[in-house]
Length: 420
Image 1 (cartoon, rainbow, N blue to C red):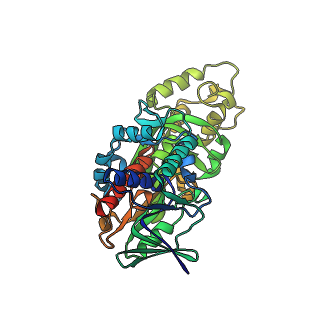
Image 2 (cartoon, one colour; image 1 turned 135 degrees about the vertical axis):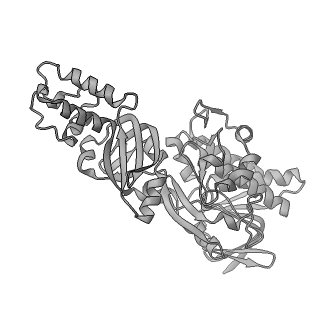
Image 3 (cartoon, rainbow, N blue to C red; image 1 turned 120 degrees about the vertical axis):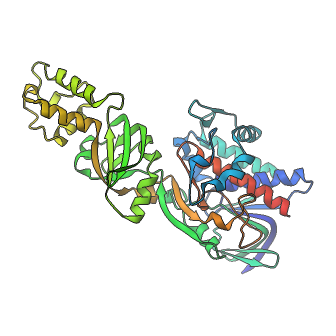
């Protein structure tokens, strides 16, 4: 193997955390009067692939409400020093300095005014180039070991030396966009332990018997996940029916508990849908009784005009109210009470999630107990740092995960430069 250059800082992973960390390191170096040599090593053919898909391409890059309450892991308070160092107003200043003007919406989510994830990535790369940092794609780091006062990184036939190393290779979610377990492997080889992984912000699989009939239908409702009848989490918002189960913002937001259950496989998990959260069950019954007076209607069209037609027909089938050719006047008070119960609490058996392939985020990761939350330096291998999704930290949907990526990248980068 050939020995390459020795850099002050080597960043493993060219995603949001990796690119911003290199920029922060160069800026901190200039502030201290000495610019460090920085290289970003990305195994893929290009950097930032996952960033391009954020917010369906509009790039929800932060949230003004970022706080430990929106993060998960064995120790969610681990995020506090990084978030305090880079609150939302500081985040906006950072992106403005790159040429990306942003604005916060009423729900706290921060977006670039251009609503283009590609433009955010372009500005990060342009800044990286202007700072003199080196970006090297198609370079998979397969081994990382202590050597002298620094580290040796094996990349193909080359050994790259670095005084400080930052691992921010992301998580196992979205393998089609570059997600992998590489970062966990590198850190584990240096003695770090891993909290079990499972998918989060992910679609949920249910018994497909009825949901297939309403594939593609969207409703504004309330979704709750229950384990053995006990409600674990709930969310109001858009629910999307698919041929395998449930998706949509409301489902994805609270899907973490399903991923955790899927990993353990203990107890029965159900999804309970309230399709009319703005109405009480009694109000729904009153409306259904009134609809029984509609002339020349059969069950097939009993709910048409009240809820989505296909959804209405599926609910009637779920409630056992068949055949569809029966006149609506044949419905009894007991039938209507039963149907109202389904509309306010349709229970579906959950079978799992769509796995890491459909997930936006990885829950679990390298244990935060083995890193200093004030610097993100390893307690086991001095000079080694970690940031972003590779650690056992995952955020809620809404820009929290990218917020953690930028904030942890800044803390780690500035800590590395200070240590040099």
